[in-house]
Image (tube, rainbow, N blue to C red; front, side, top):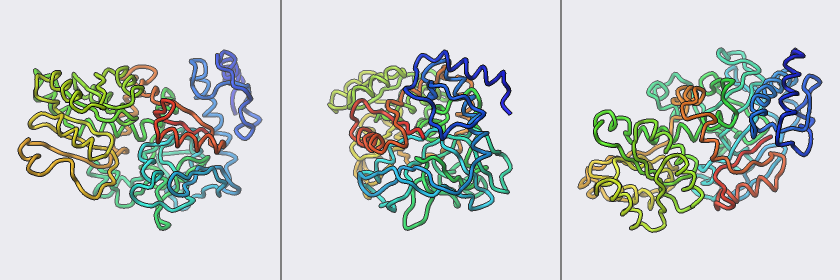
Length: 437
């Protein structure tokens, strides 16, 4: 039971809220144990941050007691290029002893969602639940679950992993022999996505991690995908190695593409020792955020001007590494042009091209370039990054929270559809979209 003292603190914190919501918390999220004042639940103000954490625990306990797989839930569903809907679907059930069911508290739209949304690459099945970024609370557990329990706040990687196969043991959890990506179903094979009220998580013991009390849902959401992807990008760019091997030389990096992953790559490169980070994009609002994060903003609209700025900032050599977060031939070519002799290109943007045209083998040889690309093994990095965020390594609140520019309700189909359009076309300064059940 919730003590009267803690309930009173919960109510008093909400009374301090400076951003009063237009209506009370939706009735489907309440029980007789939980007060329902009309106040902010989305950590917009300091009073509501601790209140929201307590509310999440209350909701978790109540939902865990009441969860039933019977009935339906709301979910964002994919219906072909540039067609998403909010549909009613059956609530998930435990299918294997290693499953858990998570009540989603926040999900978000990822840049990699834009590829199937725009009709690029693999054609996903129509009607599937979309999305792979989420955080929430556990409301049901399978019989084999050892490390998690009902009521736990959890963060999730964008793909499942067993933790035991060859690839998991070699820190490549994204290529787990038994794993799969959330929101990615082709010919009936795959896992339903997370832009929904509930999500089933296979191999949950090795896919989810607990979210500490001092980490908000927004921060936990970032720890599951874009922050580890940015960290992976900087790590593969060998920022840390170059900094340690050549401490007298200021390690430099150029981040190409200042979407969510690129912005996280800026923070990661700095944390790993880069002393000068350039940020290239064509959207001014994203460059402004990059500058806030400590990078030197460079408008990428004029290629020659961008090259000139970076050459001047690196004694004419070019940067030690280029961190490419777009996944397109022109940006890889730009990365190649920006690096010095012996430099490293680390590309984490999702690629859909069947041929490589950015530079030839001869050009690569003549520049002694190292080129790396691939999907981030997010689960491998999550424990370390959750600890850093919890310890306020980057400050409090985590500066990455600033990338969330828009928030929509899962139950508002027009708002969800509009959010996809804004995110794809970069309208209204849209950097990243939260979808809240």
